[in-house]
Every structure is written in structure tokens, then in C-alpha cells.
Amino acid sequence: MKKGFTLSEVLITLGIIGIVAAMTLPTLIQRNQEKVTVTKLKKMYSILSQAYLFAVEKNGTPDLWGFGNRDAAAEDEEDLGYEAKNAKIMKDILFSQVKNIKICDAGLKKSECGLADRYYYANGSKVTELDSKVSSLSMLDGSGIMVLINDGTCKDVRGTGKYLENVCAWVFVDVNGKTAPNIMGTDLFGFYLTKYGFVPDGTKNETTYSFVHSSGHGRTAWVIYNENLDYLKCPDKLSWDGATKCK
Image (cartoon, rainbow, N blue to C red; front, side, top):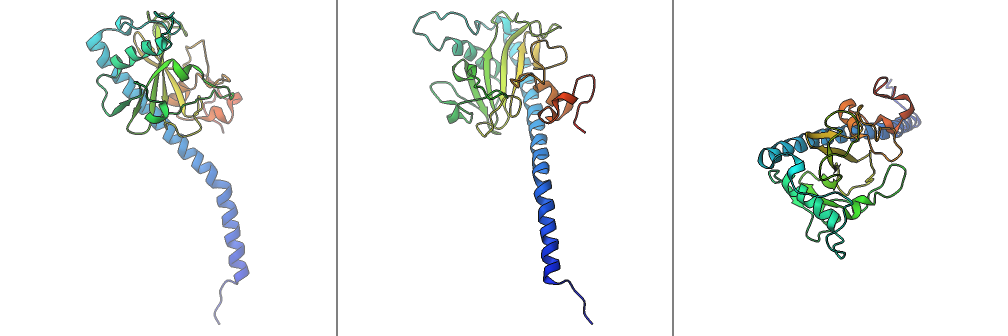
């Protein structure tokens, strides 16, 4: 006598499997995407740090590169791109030795260079500084970089220690280019270019932003050092001196 499963039993089993898959797949996909983000962000940190070393060897420290302040008055009243020109001076020097890049200046829209035309803070408001005050480039792996000047003398203070007391500019990295969501702290992350090298924003010594800031600024250091984006899930339970991941 042969035994087997009835059609109803097979259908019930398949239905249970489908329900379990529907419940677990989104979590698995999200975890995988977070791992990709962590890997790409660490890679960009390495690229930026190497670019700084090459640029300094050839041109001296950034305070000698000849760019002005972000909000300095234009030399000409009609020179509406003055801030972006200062950013371009820095970008051209900083990335002169970096290969496999595409420059996004000379009239190119950021979307034509693999970047989003609009970025948002974590609270939903627009990041207007990235509309016109930056100089941009994209990498062949699909990520993008935007340079935003802070202080031409590299004396902007963002925290304690020689790095954060000598900030020159902000360099933003979009790990997946123009692909959504284009949100600060989710796929867009900031690094401070200082007189002495690059520092991810949001370190323990920073006094301007932290990883729980509503704008999404200050999350880069958390992702690099703790290798997760758990501040999107349980920010109230995390701290640099306590838990570094959601349970």
C-alpha cells in the first residue's frame, strides 16, 4: 500500500512556507543592503584618505590650496556660482590622482553624472546646500561624491582634537548614486576634510552632530565603526559608550 501527501496537505505546506518567506525576506534583504552600504562606505573612506595623502604630498595641507569660504561674497554680483567654484578648486586638487571618476562640472546636471538632483535630510526637509554650492564627481562603481566648502583657512570647529578643530570642508558620499532614497544617513554620508586628513562625521569627539540628530548628519562614523545602521531602528537604545546594535 503506497502512502503520500494529499493535495490539501501540499497546499497547506506551501502556504505556510509562503507566509514564512513573506515575513523573513524583507528583513534578510534589508540586512544585506546594510552590509552593502557598510562595505561601500568603508571603501570610500579609504579612497578619500588616500586622495588626501597624494594631494598633500604635492600641494601641501588644504589651507594652502587657495579656496575661499562657503558663504563668502562673490567677486562679481553676477557670479552666482562662486561657492561652487571654491568647491571645484578643492575637488580638482583632492582628486587629481584618483582614477575611474567622472567629473560633474561644466554644466552637467548631477543626474547626468550618476547623482541625484535632490537630496533630503532624515526629517524629510531638502538639503539645499547640495543643489548649487557643491562640486561633484561620480565613481565607476555607481557611487558619487560632492564637495561642500566650510572654511578656506581650515579653522572651522566641529568638536575637540586637532582634526575637528581644523575643518576645511564637508565631502558627501552617495553610496548608490541617484538610486533612492537619497537620504542623509541612509545612503548619503558626510566626511569632514580637515587640515590633517579625513574624519567621518559623528565621531564621539564631535560636538555639532550625533548619530541621533534628526537631520541624519553625524551617522557616518557610527556606520564605519559599528558596521550597522541600527540607529534607524532603535536609536534610543544606542550610544558610543553602551549598546552598539539593536537586540
